[in-house]
Amino acid sequence: MAEKITSINPRMLEWARMISGTTLDYVGERIGGIDRVVLWEKGEDYPTYNQLKELCQIYRKPSFQNLLKSRIYLHHIEHCLTICTIISHVN
Image (cartoon, rainbow, N blue to C red; front, top):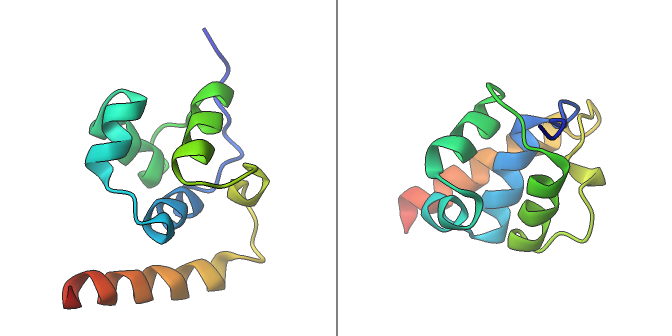
């Protein structure tokens, strides 16, 4: 069994998906189920290295380094998630 990358910040996964404009349905189709993606974004499960590489391709991010846990980005992520939530409710 492949090792899961537990150093991923789940909020960064959600942020990367939202900022790329990618839907949960689309990611679920590519990765193997919406439930899996939701668990990753909640921090209740973690992707493997290969799954993470696939996410980076889906989200159009050249590297997963920006998805790793980092307190520096926490405030920025919360701000971006708030903006994305507001925008999604307006549209």
